[in-house]
Amino acid sequence: MRIEHQIRAFEQIFKSYDGLLPLHRFLHLYFKQNKKMGSSDRRWSSRYIYSFFRLGKALMKEQQVLRLAIADFLCNTTPSLVVDTHLPNLADQIELPLKAKLALIESAFPAFKLSDVFSFHQNLSAAVEKEDFCESFFIQPDLFLRVTKGHLKSLLADLKAHEVPVKELSETTLMLPNGTKLENVFPNQKFYQVQDLSSQKTGLYFEPKAYDRWWDCCAASGGKSLLLHDLEPTVQLVVSDVRETSLNNLDDRFHEAGIKKYQKKVLDLLQNNDQDLHDYEFDGIILDAPCSGSGTWGRTPEMLYYFDEHKITMYSRLQRGIASNVVKYLKPGKPLIYITCSVFKQENEEAVRYLEENFPLKLEKMEVIKGYKDAADTMFVARLIKTEPA
Picture 1 (spheres, rainbow, N blue to C red):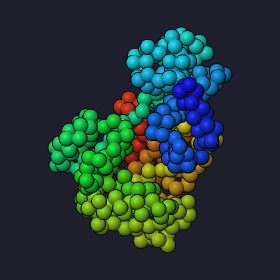
Picture 2 (picture 1 turned 60 degrees about the vertical axis):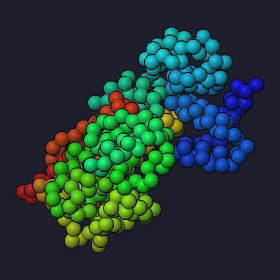
Picture 3 (picture 1 turned 180 degrees about the vertical axis):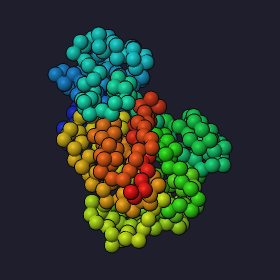
């Protein structure tokens, strides 16, 4: 039977996956190694494995195939054989809104607790609404574009010509369905960047001035630097990362965006970098810190299943170590922008408190950017000002 074939394919993928690679990368390699799987097999296997992980640790005592059916019912609005077969009494209600479907599951399975989907509640930042946050894991986040000013109309015209559903959020932000193949729509990436909505909102905290010198110290592929440049094109940029490959990707993105003047450094910020930075003083530092990524688990739901709580402490120590080594290069009166894509208080508010208590920094403002309300990532941002010497 076809349903047995689908379940067997799902089970083989689940048994082969250990959580070490991001799920999307694992599936790419898995399908490449199992070329007998047709496009339909790949599509259903991907749907099932992503749905399964979105259930987190809820109903762990139930059989795996039943948990899969429940997860697929909650995550999708189109029929599937696994729901038809293992939840026949609910199958015709799969198009209902999520809250209604959750109520049906709670009624049919009294052991179901929404709070079990995300099992790290004691670590959450206080501003995060737990129920809304947990519900968000059953919804695939959208794809967001940050558009260069003056080019919105032309991009909208191209999307309309290709019949791509799009929502205009502002004169610089577009929202598209996740999985939209942008390469089929736009010949180049010169006038837009793929950047999550919450990531774009962190730019409200930058406030750069003309000809400032800024350091994006954990730049990765340069998303925050590109945002900073769009806000103030005259900013003198220094970008660094511990991974040279990330900076190579940054070069490509900067080239496409037309950014030519910037300095690039490969730096381990847990070490003393005075030899490279001894004569530098910055008007602003962006510390987009390495973190648990817990605010992005709507895109990587496998982490609901595989993440170990002890890693929160590891990331917290890493963030404090990096901050300790970058603050000294900031001019008095100038901002340190501390950013994570985490919902954990140890990486957010407690990190800010540590910075205030141990360095000449004063908090100006901070915020949990609640992407779970907008089908986006959830992030944290704080603006701290370096105080004048006593």
